[in-house]
Amino acid sequence: MSELSLIAAIERALSARGGRLLRGPGDDAAVVRAAGAVAVTSIDAMVEGVHFKLDTHSPADVGHKALAAALSDIAAMGARPGEAYVALGLPPGFGEERALDLVRAMEELGERTGTAIAGGDVIQAPELQLSVTVTGWADSDDALAYRDGARPGHLLGVTGELGGSGAGLLLLERGERDGPLVQRHLRPEPRLAAGVALAAAGVSAMIDVSDGVATDARHLAERSGVEIVVDLERVPLAPGLREAAEELGRDPLELAAAAGEDFELLFTAPADRRAAIEQSADLPVSWIGEAREGSGLRLLAAGGRPVELTGYEHP
Amino acid sequence: MSELSLIAAIERALSARGGRLLRGPGDDAAVVRAAGAVAVTSIDAMVEGVHFKLDTHSPADVGHKALAAALSDIAAMGARPGEAYVALGLPPGFGEERALDLVRAMEELGERTGTAIAGGDVIQAPELQLSVTVTGWADSDDALAYRDGARPGHLLGVTGELGGSGAGLLLLERGERDGPLVQRHLRPEPRLAAGVALAAAGVSAMIDVSDGVATDARHLAERSGVEIVVDLERVPLAPGLREAAEELGRDPLELAAAAGEDFELLFTAPADRRAAIEQSADLPVSWIGEAREGSGLRLLAAGGRPVELTGYEHP
Image (cartoon, rainbow over all chains, first blue to last red; front, side):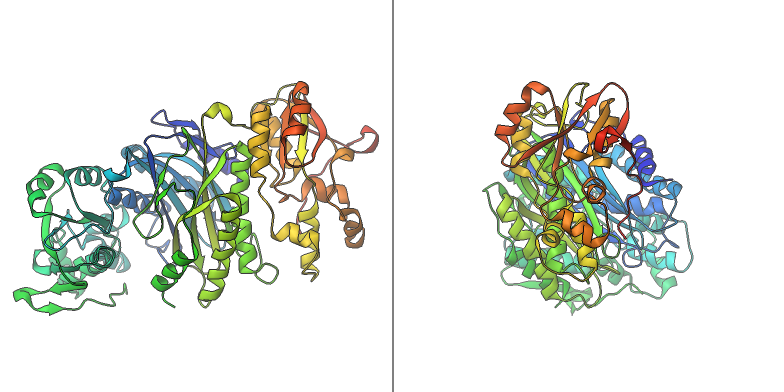
């Protein structure tokens, strides 16, 4: 299949949605009706051998994950998802069916989240590589949540559960191909509805958990000019994480706090927003710490003992 | 230099401009005030060994060219340039200075064209790879030029001169490092002002010359449902192309029509727009053919003899 016929097949696999896409793939550029006064845009790149391996991740997993990771940044701003633009580098012999599997998985996630895959580029490359740009929309920049709004006294909250993705990757690398932890790693869900709801409910700062709360809370602390304290005992663990960690010989709290790629939302909020936030999100919210005067990150283990979780590396 | 400190250095190398960039690099996503009712977006990817070689292209050349190629798509729509988002994959040992050279060249082109580099991603990769997403803006989709508006009787025009980039690449590969043809290949200029002017002056279809007029005119023909005839004798040749082609043992018309990457604008227009178009563009316009009833592309050499220029390959 030539590059042009693959592009035509990809175009057929995509569907315009939402009525905002005035011109999709096939012209020099996509044309989209602005769906708000401000555009919120993030770009994420992934490459085979660095971010995934094709012996543990199917092309569909890779496509899903690349779009999910980009959408997660839009969720962390509290913006509504809009359009995605995908650059796809295919190695020799990758084959049209696997390329279409990858695109179809993106299209499924796009359909479920209301994201139109509006444009792309297909190139030859030495190994599989993807770059996904996602644009979301909001009515004003005041409606969004940034990283720099945490203030001393604000509570630290997180959606859902953590550690599942890190444990899932370790299980994958031991040869497991099924189960909820493996799925959690392969098919993360961007928390788009929660992001919009949390921004509207008055969070003061927000970030998505891509590197692990230990790292992502530090980003909030640095951008906001506060110290953030995380009580590890209150970090919500993914179901089955303790048992999997025991089997793997790993510390479940380390997986939950440092392995990353859970793509939950980590945020701060004034204490008086606590009830509104718990009621607004379509996911469980756990309160795991607070912001204080100072700088940097403080991780507390059982009994308030400070711990370090630096240098976590996937094996 | 760590990834985080490189990112910080890149952020310092970029400047917000235009007042529309409400949040630039450093948060989960960039926030931009919509600068028109419609957003016009294109993504372009390039990878070392496929699209460029580091022994002929400096990091600054690569950065310039990647942004220029993406902006050229915005020019071909007749949109105003807005923001760029850059994913940069750096191989081991690439070094922070070369990465910053690459970004600074993008920033220079961004400054000259009014494009803000608003966000990015930096990853490790096996070889140098870039993906650039550019968003432009327009007041309505009617203000833009598409590929599908050519009608029988419309004239075919092109801006500037062709063949310089293809000759420049051949000279580069023979070891030359200077001269206007080499520069034409290394530092193409997106025809942004011409694109806006041509769209306003009433072109019926437009595309940028990235693959060569032989291929790009075929795209116009296929999308518009017409035959396009190109009179190769009327194709404007880059200054010095004939001499360089003789030295290289190549056909100058083949370089002008099939080598590509000149990033001029190729367009059709009703004959009654001819004078308005010539007066509106900030570049010379050459009339090189016409659209007819039918399909596909017809290339005519001296005396109206049909020729084929398929399968041009850079050596």
